[in-house]
Length: 283
Ligand code: SAM
Image 1 (cartoon, protein in one colour):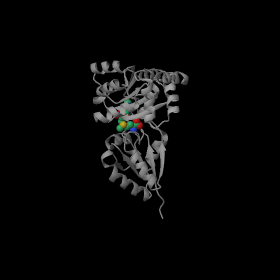
Image 2 (cartoon, rainbow, N blue to C red; image 1 turned 120 degrees about the vertical axis):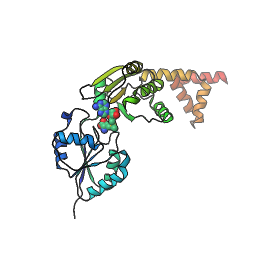
Image 3 (cartoon, rainbow, N blue to C red; image 1 turned 180 degrees about the vertical axis):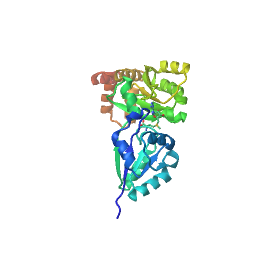
Image 4 (cartoon, rainbow, N blue to C red; image 1 turned 90 degrees about the vertical axis):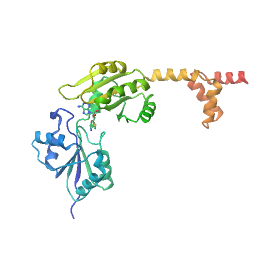
């Protein structure tokens, strides 16, 4: 009985061909088949390294049928390498789906690490790398996009987005509208000849790209909300409602009266005694 093959997730350069690893080169030479998101781009890479292997396309619009085909080949004992159009497979591409299929079929998956645009941009941004969140591409649907940005606007972690050049200015304007005028790093053409990292505010970035139209590939790294500012903003919001409305808000959430008073005191940065005193005055 033949044993199953392995799916190798091979990271490839995001611009500079020297960023390929020795292990990835060896695996690309050894596998039976290479599944590529963009076969034309991958052929150039393979030609450069004089690798001659059968290629098959695996991209967003054929991921179901092609995923099934790849799994059958793996079950048949073939070793297959998966490569993204650039960078790490599974990050903002259909690699995730193929990995799930392999896991469901008890097929071994091996990751060959290498370049990722998001991390390359993050570490050049000068913004906090301590805690960050990868948001990928924002949806183009206006309402969903707005809801998404509303969900993350109070996140204190650094936010990372991918964006295409023709959508960049619109996205920057949406970020400004919902997140406010924060610090941003716009990382362009990473590892390539015209690599550039613009570190400024979102407003300044809009101004810049309205003058020189955006070209190339972009990662946007946006400063998370400052926890102090967030607290001040929340304090201001609480001041807009009365103590009673504040207590009622918690009670309507099913919280008992004693706990509600405790939370109101904490939110408003005052002692519980002060909240009780206000309540008594009112009664
Ligand atoms: N799998 C890739 C990775 O590991 O980063 C990402 C694939 S995603 C389909 C392509 C997006 O990644 C581009 O639209 C751009 O936002 C970002 N990107 C890829 N290469 C880049 C580069 N050299 N400089 C800046 N951004 C890049």
